[in-house]
Amino acid sequence: MSKPYGKELILDLHHCDASTFNRKSLKKYFKELCIQIDMQRAKLCWWDDHGVAPEEQQTLPHLKGTSAVQFIMTSNIVIHTLDLLGNVYINIFSCKDFDADVAKKFTENWFKGKVVSSHEIKRI
Image (cartoon, rainbow, N blue to C red; front, side):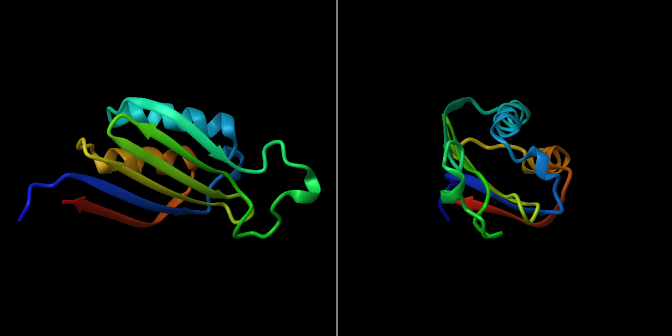
């Protein structure tokens, strides 16, 4: 078997505090998470209804929310929030090792939700 290239942590959280689903809070989450798991942040990109006319904004529960990619020097962290459902979905992928338990606990505390699914995948 090949030496692992990296790993990915996939987290699904439900019953979160949707007041944490805004750009200011999410930007701080990325910053603090990267400190917790010793990652160096790079570019942050957003996809949401910020600046979109109200009549053009998403209204369906499975679409209304914020998506963001926090690039890190060793890959990326991706987040998708579902504001109306109180759910958040996160993927942390890095070729540099990190403590998945620290990331999971920090994320659960940040969003004040419950991890309903967690998968750690070794990438080869």
